[in-house]
Length: 162
Image (tube, rainbow, N blue to C red; front, side):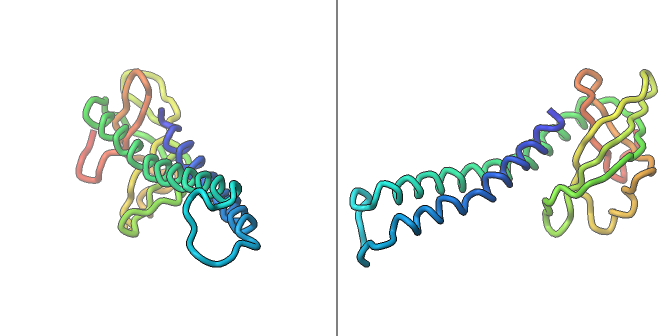
């Protein structure tokens, strides 16, 4: 479930990037049509198909691109409320391409070291203030909560300590 937001974002950008195809088809379908307004039934079949397909891609893109950070935040809230404390070393960070109020959402690859079991690698995302980005660099140690069954991880805020 940790990789699901990443996959949703990926499919959202794919659907968004291929939306040009129905627009090009709509232009081709309307070549030679006299100017004026038309009812749905008067449009050529290709134009109607392109409008439906373009609308579907726009809706899918919106749902996927908005759903990815919402799902990630819901997972983080669940782990923070029912998880166990641990420390983690940041192995890698990547930009997700999402910003909220000009603050980036960052994807983390972590080496989590719980006190009661062996270390494991996990991935998570966190909205990070632009002012705190230098604090979250590879090699840094941070406080996290992890779910013992799914090994989902959430990074704790600055004020909280495990």
